Image (cartoon, rainbow, N blue to C red; front, top):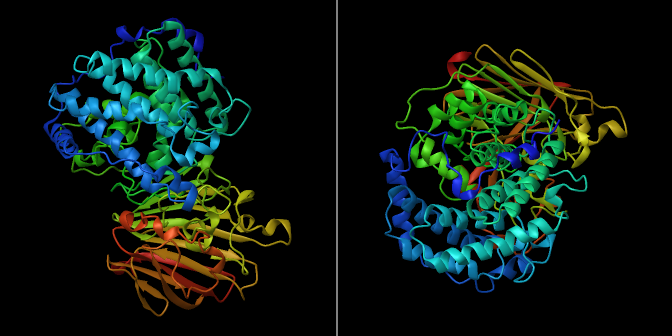
Amino acid sequence: MKLFDTDKISANLLAPEKIKWFSDIPRSFKDIPAAVMDRLSGLAKERAAFSPPDYGDSYGEYFRNGNRCNFEDMYINRRAALADLAFYEIFSGSDEYTDKIEALIRLICSEDTWCVPAHSGIKPANATNHVIELYSSETASVLCTAYRFLHDRLSPDTLSLIRTAVRERIFIPYTETDDYRWMGSNGEKVNNWNPWINSNIIFCSALICADMNEYSSLVARACSFTENYLRSISDDCLCDEGVRYWNLSGACLFDIAELIYDITGGKTDITGDIRIKNACAYPTGMYDEYGNPANYADAGIDFYPDCPLLIRAGKRTGNALLFEMGRTLYRPERLRTIHDNFYRQLKDILTAPDTVSGERVTYPESMFLKGIGVCTLRKNGFFASLKGNHNAESHNHNDAGSFVVYYKGTPLFVDPGVDLYSRYTFSDQRYKLWYMSSDYHNLPVINGRTQKNGRKYTAAPMKTGKLYAETDIAGAYGYESDFPCHWIRRLSIDGGTVEITDRFDCPTENTRLHYITRELPEITGNRLIFSCGVTAELIGIGNIYAEELNLTCENPPDGIKGDAENRHPDPHSLLIPRLLEKQWGQKSLWRIVCTPICGETVLKIYPHSGK
């Protein structure tokens, strides 16, 4: 059954000038909490002195040496400055920065292309061939936000410039082709690109379209293409792209549902559909009570949840846990006003709580996200998550069977995350980046093998129960295809102890266990002593030693055994700034290397006083 009844939506569609934006929110633009207004004012003041640098030849740097950061930083900063200044004027009623806003609009509209070089491969991008991709749709969104909500302050020439640019660069190419892979028109499996772009198309068309036929067509196409996203994800509508990209996939699906409500005057409301409910529930199984994520796939440990979004989604979908998660984790300094969907940012500001809560949410002890094979256990201050599934996920890391463990908000056993993207991130060289490899996750090397990428390299379906989960991960190493081998990994919490038990029947001569830790623990015999008051005891293990993982360079340091194949292939890789150091707030992580001495090992994690 389709989620969108396009005939009903078209029949109920309001003309852009008749839409009462955000009518479901009782707060007005002039009734924003002081802390939020202070945040907007501070961002605007920082941007007031912003002088956009010239792009120079930075666009071509991506093709020369793989660096996409230098151009994208300048590109994003132009749009972030426009957003910060516009948002302040929208909510303050001021015209203090209007001249600066108009100058930025003219600058952005003068760019030859809104397509960033990393996305130009889908079609050649230039001044006459406009490509619809993530960044170009976001550019249209921020321009249209200024057009609609600062309409009385912008000059007629500026308003005309926005209408012309968005129509020529976005609306016309969007209606003239079905060939973009992210549309999914030819049966392709699509990911976050689909709902992310489509949500922006709906928002922009509802803000500036003067022709009702064009407007109705754009909305209908966006809804039709979004059905292809629903076909591509799990039956329970969960995101296999990690917490960062849930914000730009499942959350964008909710944005579309809210947009449909707004542009039909509340006559079409799909926020109660089970698919929307399931998609929105995802964060409750992926974060601890302090806002630290189980950062599988391309996500950093510092990716804090969008709390006003969670509050709103929890309320609209009837998910009390999601609502409370957003309410208790909300901090005004975390309020996003830069990178994500601008429709959502407006609603986030309007739904931000008046005060900061000092409470903590009580989560269920066991939560299983079946469609993506992730199980989370919580008890006595511990947050422990086990990931199964396969190695062909969107934004995949070879990490089937990996886990994370945090204690009272302190990450102990961790996923390294992902560094800044380069030309190699989404190429056939992806798994030569060390943080994509199973060698640098909480996983074993089985008889000399690391995990391989591809749909056939998969963990067995996860078995779960009260405070335990287990899966056979041998298939992710390719063992099912050549000779029988089993590696059963079980995560459980018994009282105040987290246990990771590995039972296996493969040779142990070239087998070792790797554990990635945030700090260098004190190694005493078979125990790892952490500074937060936690001990990890290793049973069935022989030799134990620690290796430093330097986060300030692309490659693991020299001297780590067996890692020659994990070197980055690009001699210019150090031109790419490091993000991992910023995410972790430190220069190193640590890899604990252990040699099993029998076919069963146990990692027991407990507070010092617990044993």
